[in-house]
Length: 75
Image 1 (cartoon, rainbow, N blue to C red):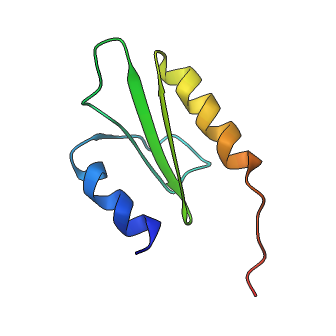
Image 2 (cartoon, rainbow, N blue to C red):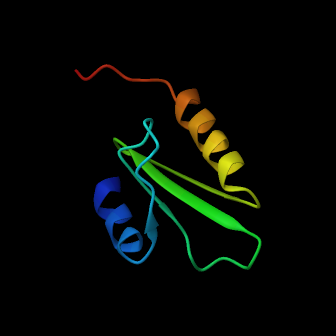
């Protein structure tokens, strides 16, 4: 199963995030304890999830994680 298909279910019941240029899809997890935020994003076939206390910091960490993954040339 592709990551896109795995990502689709939880994304439907969450608050979407459209302002992240480094992600194909992203959403904020609404089921975390008060004072905590959870950002999940998908880019191509990679899913990154960050749980933190600050949305801006969570987005920065998620972007750093995406940027740390080497890009593979399609064969």
